[in-house]
Image 1 (cartoon, rainbow, N blue to C red):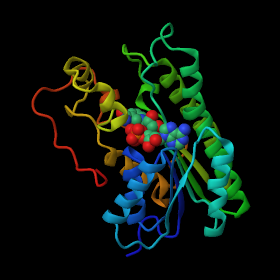
Image 2 (image 1 turned 135 degrees about the vertical axis):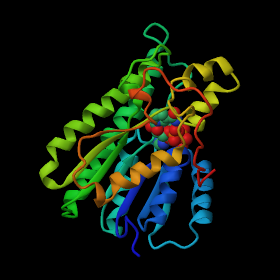
Image 3 (image 1 turned 180 degrees about the vertical axis):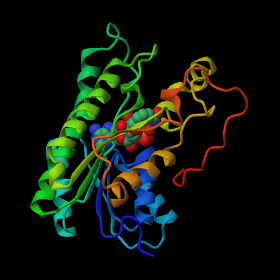
Image 4 (image 1 turned 90 degrees about the vertical axis):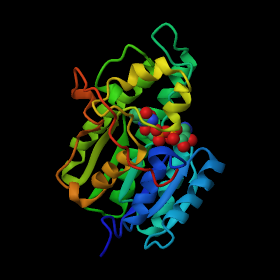
Length: 277
Ligand SMILES: NC(=O)c1ccc[n+]([C@@H]2O[C@H](COP(=O)([O-])OP(=O)(O)OC[C@H]3O[C@@H](n4cnc5c(N)ncnc54)[C@H](O)[C@@H]3O)[C@@H](O)[C@H]2O)c1
């Protein structure tokens, strides 16, 4: 049976770990050709080895490329690389940072603000811009661009990371606008809004601080953080033609967190296993 993404060419940014790596694995399983990109070269090569191990026989191509999303020339070259594959069908603008020095309005240093916007917002803009150029160049009548935002752009938190939150709000806004601009070309734009996850981006920062951890965990109706694979499964849906009428969505994958007031007690639900870690 052909995979759900058979014949599609996809670029993933931030593919060296977390959501990006799980997505690379699922996309490969679903028959897509995948260009995994990341700024961290050694981690990207380890991630490539992992995809090959988990998906030993693939219908699509699988390659890596070092890309800093805040540099337009890097993005342009990565998208250009897919010309020989037939052009981009799916662009997953997923790379992002949450800096340890981020904080409230007084705490956040200006250079951290700028760094965060450069990667989390400008990087997504560059990805969208060059994906559209490629889609047009190759005369595609459909395309899917998925931009990773965050649940923190939808609800306020008393544990501020102002630069990060503002950057993810910008991702929601620019994604929505592009979705409307390009709707009649068949190019869909959706934002993925994950809840806090069990990935290094957050877990390294929480470390062994039980109070800090509990302050977040208590808000999950399911009693646990999300797993990267749970986000990746949503990305596969948004990337595939199954979601042909899903456009301009803030696609929230949060276990119900943003809809909860008082959460249940009792043991947490069982988490699915990630494939890449
Ligand atoms: N982990 C969470 O709790 C959570 C929650 C909501 C949203 N998100 C978002 O999900 C996305 C993926 O994060 P993750 O949780 O998988 O964490 P992660 O840290 O495992 O993945 C992020 C990847 O982006 C890469 N990256 C950083 N700067 C880059 C740059 N300039 N150019 C290219 N790549 C760069 C990193 O090397 C890393 O591999 C991010 O946009 C993040 O903000 C994460």
